[in-house]
Image (cartoon, rainbow, N blue to C red; front, side):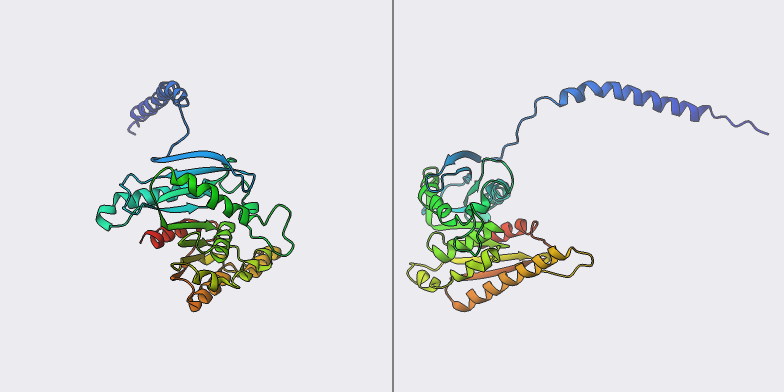
Length: 308
């Protein structure tokens, strides 16, 4: 019987083992060095500072992105974004992309102003205090401060941003998601001349027994007194609509059914369209998006709605 020679196979095993040992020794020192020298990431054209507000008594972290392209004759358009810690990076990238293609598309990139909190949390800080309207039934202590927050934007933040670049006072927008979307609607209904474009993503219309809907009373008259009607984009994620899902907790299912995130946004868009109070109303149901993920396509649609 011929003898089976295992020498080549054993040699390969020894070679692989030796290579592994050599590699472990070879890379251990560079890997240790690779842990050194890291710094916080920065955004191109991005800048930030913390400011204290006389209107609210709170501190905010303000992020600003100014286009590299020359300002139009009337100044740059401006998009103010709530939850700035989370929304500013994506919106700044969209603005830079718009600027890079402006010669081809003819679209003007906006200045992006993210309004966040020094906590550094994506959705932390005092958003429940700042984004909720007053007058809601059983409003928790420390909430319902949207009017003071809007005073801060109008009286303190806007003049500050105007010192950084020439701005177009007739092309300014406000974006907000969830509680931020609620605040955006509150600004539209009570101060329709504060911005020309309002972008409300997955707004928490349910808050305070739907107190936001009571602000529609007198809204048409407030708009009629303006030199031009504002525009509104509403959006919601398809998966925010309540559906009975097997073993879903009953309490959670009851909350989702009561809040009617999609239904309330659709109903409001239909009502405002029929009223003719606004220059333009768009509603987007964002396919396969839930409450958390809907923010991202809503920002993209909102940018298109504003600059397009």
